[in-house]
Image 1 (tube, rainbow, N blue to C red):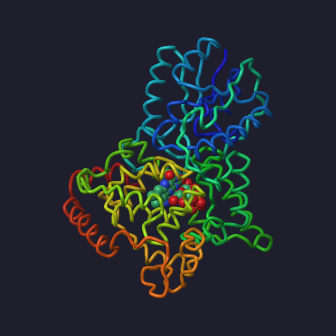
Image 2: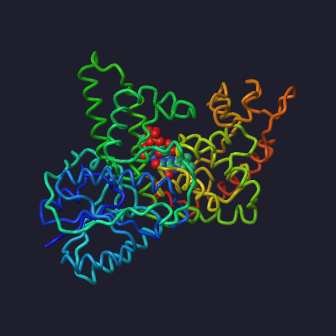
Image 3: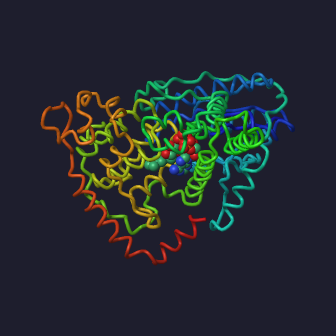
Length: 478
Ligand SMILES: Cc1cc2nc3c(=O)[nH]c(=O)nc-3n(C[C@H](O)[C@H](O)[C@H](O)COP(=O)(O)OP(=O)(O)OC[C@H]3O[C@@H](n4cnc5c(N)ncnc54)[C@H](O)[C@@H]3O)c2cc1C
């Protein structure tokens, strides 16, 4: 008898419950399927594939060390599983539960039918503190912390080798994946994830809280674990475990470790919890990927989508230096900090009055750490369409003064402003002594902000105590 361990967004060998459990029972085929249709989806780009391939090479090398390398198959999951089940008399398919986009959701529904038809058991396991089938959020927090307090699984001791050939990984061109050049992309893989986690816990975290919103320093002082988590190169439980280990050590040997700031570590741990909190929302309500959480906002931006404004925003040509610097940097590095993401979305949704459903894919394409559960929930929050969150409209000029006072980040990414005097770097259109080859602001910031604010608040005040609002609160707030 042979079982399959199906790797999905859990590309690691340690703390991998399905791999750990399956390897103690039957012979296993460790399988990754490069699903051709998945890579054609509009929310995905070649930077995700690049990170995936790093992760798969690393995973293959770890699995080979254990006795059986990774088996790659390319094509349609239903067909591939049908063939493997027949050929190897497969009894069980082991995997983690996956909460991802609508395409993966629909694919899993089809596979469940196939496995039932073929009499194969699909042993899906809960992961990262996201739970299937919750009716409300009453117990979520307790369940989450219980999960995170568990000791991570070690890597399996040995895997029996199976006589099966692996396919070659296709290229970006073979799969026809949308390509957006990203010269400074992070390198993927389980080993790299642990290296990044260790460097964060041992030193980089010190100024985490202080620099969390700085576009200049946060590249270094934020954990930078989001992409490793998105591809499952490390589990959330492992990060909690090693954070506790480092903190306990620090408390016990204060004089030896002087590079830990407990305030920063606590702030970091809360964000780890937010991660699962947001993914749980998508698990409970998959429609948030494409529909407003609160229906009262459904037609608020109807007919207002202005293509020129959208293109200026996505290309970093809005005339607002910090907005443009962030967008240009994000395109080239695949990452920007939380506040700058929020500002980019707030600017598009509120100042440019664009419907988030028409620009969310541009951001998912360029965030290497794209994680649908966080992505769509956050975009909706920043666009004011949830009906339950505080409405926040970021003023990009204030953010520029607060977060990049000396304009160093702006000058790094907006070369046209290289010679702009510091006193004008946040509002170069006010400089009378020089002209720059840089656009004038595409909208009046104050006017558009006030208009957006009045429209969003007028709906919010009407729906505050509505039945729909109550239902959303019950379902999504713990
Ligand atoms: C509009 C918008 C879209 C976003 N889209 C994504 C996305 O697709 N993928 C993604 O991982 N994060 C997303 N975030 C959340 C956040 O910006 C990133 O998680 C964070 O910047 C990643 O950097 P880091 O790993 O250094 O985070 P750290 O600050 O070091 O935090 C540690 C971990 O906590 C989690 N986390 C941190 N902040 C948040 C948050 N606000 N909400 C939920 N989880 C959080 C992440 O997993 C992160 O890796 C989005 C935020 C906004 C405003």
